[in-house]
Image (cartoon, rainbow, N blue to C red; front, side, top):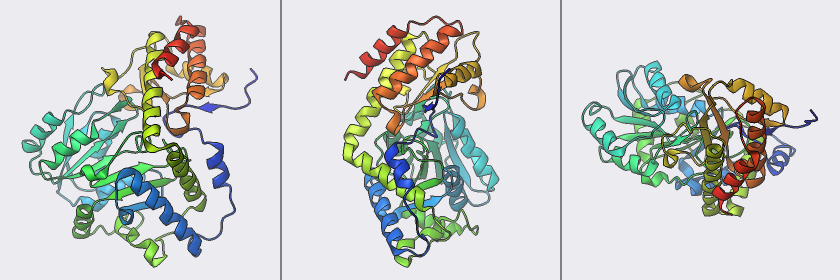
Length: 384
């Protein structure tokens, strides 16, 4: 083989565009002391807040992989003995229950099959009955292990009809799917290594006024995950701990790229590319994990490994051809393969390469595929 580089089409971490790499390579100063860095941090907050409909002062960006945001939301809202309604249709939805238990809370789980999505009417029934004493609800917007996307707006309405606080893991959807916290999201959690196309290392939080008030009452005493310590950092020009200037520079460039294209165009592009990838997967005789294409996420496509083939063998062979696709997690590990089309990688050029290599590899390993049919299905699905 003559591969000199690998194209990353995993559902995070992702391929990083050259513009963002160059932004991260700029000379740094001292983010604790440089007033210009605080201005840049505030600009990033403003751009992100506008993208998700939040107040700028209610947006926090800190150093730490996105999992730190999930844990922080629980740590800052949950007291010992608190009941928490955990809505789950996947691996990361289930993980919220573990976090709640770790902080002394009592998770009440509403779980549906990984191949489907949460039903707002059933959620209302659950919150009125099994979880009527819960004051906090958690959910995941995009479940990357199974490639599903829950209907956020409808679920927010269901939760708010019962007067509860809502925590949303949107790590794999922010930037690729429309989100507006004004629908009623109390803590929105994002990360840098998905649609925003940066390395792992930043957590982004958008917090409602009601959530701030609740956190003051809970009075979490930890330090690194203490959300309250980040309130007013720009006005005080003081971070709780040293920030990452390269990652903030990269995030600023990422958001500029999104705004240059236009939010509506970005969301349309993700839907179109996802539709094309789904059609290509079907043309290759592969079965989607989501029961319906309507449940499939615009940022990731998950499909079952063909019978008789090793998923890891598919991944290893694809890497020899210069394309890095992903396995899955939890109960789906070893059974499911995934292609991420997030941000920069949600493109015709990149996905054409990925589908070509996947079809070639499947042929080599004994699952007969017509490469031309797969590419034609992809391009037809995109409908340029």
